[in-house]
Amino acid sequence: MFRQQHLVKGGLGGSSDWGIPFLSSLSDSSNSSDSSGSVLVKTNKGDFTADAAIVTLPLGVLKSGTVKFSPALSEEKQAAIARLDMGVLNKVVLKFPKVFWPENREVFGYVSENQQDFTDFFSMTPYTEAPILIAFTGGSFARSLENLSSEEIVEKAMAVLRRAYGNGIPEPVGVARTRWNADPFSFGSYSYIPVGATTGDRKVLAEPAGSNLFFAGEATSAKYPSTVHGAFLSGIRESDRIKNNF
Ligand SMILES: Cc1cc2nc3c(=O)[nH]c(=O)nc-3n(C[C@H](O)[C@H](O)[C@H](O)COP(=O)(O)OP(=O)(O)OC[C@H]3O[C@@H](n4cnc5c(N)ncnc54)[C@H](O)[C@@H]3O)c2cc1C
Image (cartoon, rainbow, N blue to C red; front, side, top):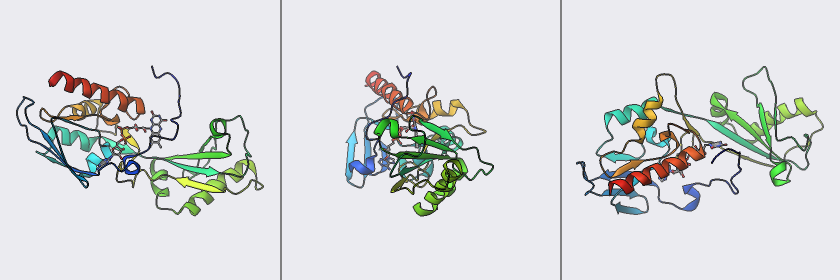
């Protein structure tokens, strides 16, 4: 089903762009094993009541505690949330007046002695026919870049590109950058298993809380974590669970 790489046209977007309510708390009125209770979802745009809810908040948001659960999530689930962690992968998109790298090349790397250097560049030219490069950064370097201005980041990326392609390359005419670690809708890019956590923690995270509150999202996927398809399949998993429970 998912054997090839695909670019999502227009990107995945985000609830902040779509004007979706910002969720602040979830209360599950049921405390027994039947499904007769309801879930109250409080947001900045009003309250919503439903027979059941699927929580797809990113692990980073669950870890931050910005969304309150009532009753509190089980100690086991809280411990799994604490053990799992969010990694950071950021992108810096650079638009140039012309292509100066090999036009048919999709990816190129720069092997640097300095760990605080850009190393991976993806060309969007094959997909967009525009002279656009995306520089990828991960881990502590990506985190540290979030504190820099766009001008400072461009200068760092350009220093590497000049070393690779010479001083004659043009300056970018446009720049866009992500700050996934600071983003209050994600607090990180996607989940990973640090030392001390296990895949079992993902399974605990995927367990329902009570009989009306269900959990999906990439961090709950034991088989395809950290991916779009893992998140997608986890939604199907939980809708099946609701179908069987109600
Ligand atoms: C830079 C980068 C590159 C990636 N590349 C790939 C790739 O090549 N292939 C791949 O398969 N995966 C990739 N991923 C991972 C993939 O994007 C995620 O695994 C996937 O989007 C997770 O889906 P999700 O539904 O679990 O969470 P999300 O897509 O994060 O959805 C959670 C939603 O909850 C919303 N939300 C958060 N807090 C609140 C709140 N309080 N109230 C209301 N809404 C809230 C968020 O805005 C968001 O819309 C990449 C991720 C990043 C950051």
